Each structure stands twice: as structure tokens, then as C-alpha cells.
Image 1 (tube, rainbow, N blue to C red):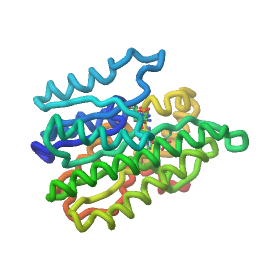
Image 2 (spheres, protein in one colour; image 1 turned 180 degrees about the horizontal axis):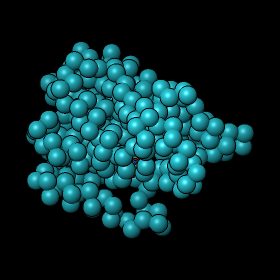
Image 3 (spheres, rainbow, N blue to C red; image 1 turned 30 degrees about the horizontal axis):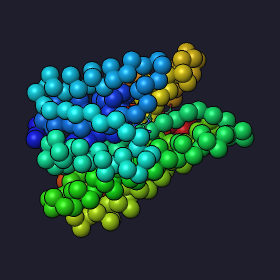
Image 4 (cartoon, rainbow, N blue to C red; image 1 turned 45 degrees about the vertical axis):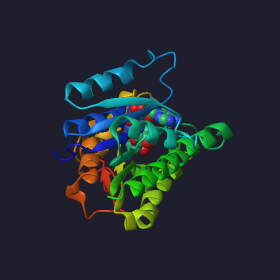
Length: 260
Ligand SMILES: NC(=O)C1=CN([C@@H]2O[C@H](COP(=O)(O)OP(=O)(O)OC[C@H]3O[C@@H](n4cnc5c(N)ncnc54)[C@H](O)[C@@H]3O)[C@@H](O)[C@H]2O)C=CC1
Ligand SMILES: C[C@H](O)[C@@H]1OC(=O)[C@H](O)[C@@H]1O
């Protein structure tokens, strides 16, 4: 098992890529603390998605807790770490994954959408990484941080002008943290998913034409699945990647390199 008896925190762990990361880590022997936010939307049964992940992890024989909190709030990271230590005694791995992508045109972008996207995606990654790193430093035996950046750190999107800079920022954050935290044996890397079918882009991909367009552009011929990303996160979190820090790994079926 790649993460036997490790303690993993996953932000945005209730759905999509984060949920797959949480379950994949548990399958590899980890106990998991998952963070989530905004599941009280009218279209969701409060906590039902969260309860499902907790049950799935427990069925794998591992322990799991859920901690609600908006990662954009500076206090959420420290609270999440404190609750994890209270439950499991330590933190070995952070998967900083929570993010939003409310598609919107640039010229009339409301400042609130820009500011919220920045605060959740980049601010959230910063504060939670800082809190987890302080705990790992105190433990004294290193750790691994894997952030969910995106192919969008490298290429643009006309309806994502507020989003792509946050993903470039997350990539850059991991690079700088790799330097700042290397002396404490804390490795920092990011994954760059391509187009992964989740709630985040369900509306965008609801058009059969758009979905077919992506499938044509992706050399491996299909959209990504959350577990495609989760398995790479497990690798980067594990000792298999013991000499990997400051790296970013595209998980996109070849989409990025496909010019024509
Ligand atoms: N779906 C895709 O094609 C891609 C997604 N990504 C990134 O992957 C990450 C996860 O995305 P998906 O799984 O697709 O999204 P999703 O919408 O399926 O899940 C989002 C998760 O984040 C949580 N969340 C949302 N706002 C939060 C906040 N303020 N504080 C704490 N938790 C919050 C939700 O509770 C949920 O667990 C995001 O950072 C996204 O930018 C990157 C590249 C591609
Ligand atoms: C939400 C998008 O469909 C998704 O998120 C990203 O980061 C990439 O831009 C993907 O296409």
C-alpha cells in the first residue's frame, strides 16, 4: 500500500476529483479528513454527498472525518488541521484541491465573481498549505503537499479569464513552497488535470457538440475521470515520488500537446 497509515487531508473532498482523491488515498491505506463547502445548495441534500464518501472510506477499513469550511477564509486551514490532528494525531499529506469555476465572459465580469474565484482557488490553496506545512514542520518528519492546478495554468479560456490565473497561481505556489519547505522535507507538487467530467463543468459539457469537440481534441479519445487524477495524486503523495518536488504533472489524455 502506497499510503499505509498515513493521514491525508483533502480539501473539496466531497465531490468530483477531491472525492476520488479521498477514496484512492483510503484504498492505499490512509485515514482521511475531508473538507467541503457549499453543499447546502438547494440542489443538494445537505451532507448526503459527504456522508457517501465517509461511508465509502469506512467500508475500505479506514477512518474518515468531514470538516465543513470555506477555504477562502484564512481561519479554515488551521481549523481543518487542528480537527485532523485531534482525530488522527498528525498530518502526512495535504491534497489542496477545492476550487470553483463559474464560467463567465470577460468584458462584463462582475467583480464579485472574480474576487470569489481568486479567494477560493488561490487564497484557499495558500492558507490551507500554510496551515498543513506548519503542522508537518512541527512533526519533524516531512510530508507531501499536492495541489490541484490545471491545464488552465498553461493555456487560456475565453470564459475563464478569472479562473486560469488562479490555476497558474496554484502551480507557482507549489514551486515556491517546494523551495520554502524543502528544508523540512516537505515535498510540494501539483497535478494539472485536463477536462475531467465533474459537476464543475457539467453545464459546459452538457452540449453534445462541445463534448464531442473535446473528445476529438484529446489524443486518448475520452474525457478524463476523477480517478485518472486521483491515482496521480496518490503517486505524488507517496514515497514512490520521494525525490520529486516543485513538479507539475499534466493529467489530460494528451490534450495540451495536441496543436493539430
Ligand atoms: N473538472 C475539471 O475538468 C478540472 C478541475 N480542476 C480543478 O480540480 C478541483 C476540483 O474540481 P472538481 O472536482 O471538478 O469540482 P466539483 O465542483 O466537482 O467539486 C468541488 C469541491 O470543492 C468544494 N468546494 C467548493 N468551494 C469550496 C470552498 N470555498 N471551500 C471549500 N471547499 C469548496 C466542494 O464542496 C466540492 O467538494 C478544482 O480546484 C478545479 O479547479 C482542474 C482541472 C480540470
Ligand atoms: C471547468 C473546466 O471544464 C475544466 O477546468 C479546468 O481547469 C479546465 O479548464 C477544464 O476544462
